[in-house]
Length: 587
Image (cartoon, helix red, strand yellow):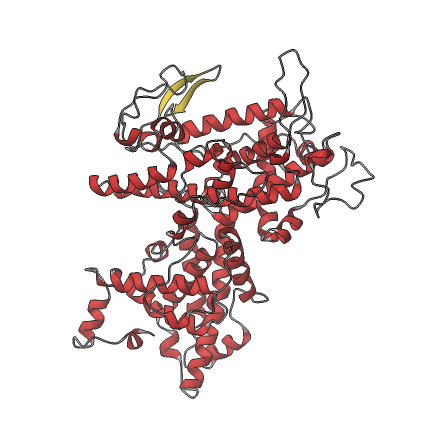
């Protein structure tokens, strides 16, 4: 066992049995692509269907118990989505495009649509992460594209050390397998990125500790120990952690990344050693790497068959371009040292991502005057981590409680609203945490630590904006009593919901609007009323955050405000059917 994980494990005894969070996709049995290889014992279904698997396949078939080599029965579909698409000669982008058309034509239930959307988002997150993985790997290790190919060896020849390319593939496979275990991380861009940094940190430490494996490292990497070129680190010593260096160089959030490493990654790696999936004092040692690599790939293949997700090792293959899909041709002046397929992988989904609100929010028709100046074009990962950094800078030094100035405003009211406000915030927080951690068919539950962290940021933001609004109102009303405004329950619930939405957006959470108002049982009409108030009151919001809130405004104005049970009808009736202006609607 590498690093200090083994020493920690020895001190605290064996870890509890691992409990993977892989769930079964079960929907309806469907015949799939007929030209699958029927000779495979693990993947030998006889299948038919539109587009060779577009109609559900592993995505929607019922799980069955299938025999595996020496492992008894395995619950799963016995055929992977990636293999179906490969047999049908469909790229992943084509698959999602055809699935959307087919779902519309067939009028499929919402539950199935949500599962497809979640699968697509996981695909998008993985693509963005892989695009980030390559330059970080090249920063830490030697360039696998410049490595000379190894000659074919017979079985009688001795084992050869792992190459940089082997290391590249092993690190990515370790990441996707670990990410699959933590389903609440899988489609979360920020958490997935920090999990990747943890995997790179682990592989770096093993390369540093393992004898004769230092040649894998890039000698110009800034995270190398000062005495790297003259001193070898003993196996008994703790290797340096490069999480801080990676966060500094590659747009990471140090506190978040360290939290992922300590509370999720290290315990899970210990469990992989307990299950004998990984073994050895050094993962990269000559006698360990081949077995570790084989065992890890075998476990991941079984996971893909069980869960019905796409095989994320598709990014590593020579046919990545064809299997993923390239919406546009890559320029002829390709970087030296890269294969055509690898160069395509770096840019293949730009058009696909441009359509996705979660990574690049579209400019709405409303609220353009609130947009900040245009910011430089950055990667989705950098955008997500910078959004979180911007949010953290807004609330830096503040507490998730009323400030002294806000308490003074409360006490100046005829009836102090402080007690009811704080109890309301607590109630909303409990509702949020309960829903955020609860698993559903279409959404995995997140760990309570993630929920508490996001709630705390939202509470700080809520009290900060509430104070700003009250100070502005005090000046506007020349010190008049604010009791009536501060006792409006719907105003506080809407403002708190809006703050939670900002936090979720900053973290690129899959729980997008209208999830938050459904959880808090809040009418869209009331949520709309606080958006402009919030934007006017907080100058620190990024351009993308403002665009996101404006897009919600547009969504409410287009449809959500006009549903049968909308509060808008009561407001119209109260105003004697006189339609108010947008300015009059706001609090």
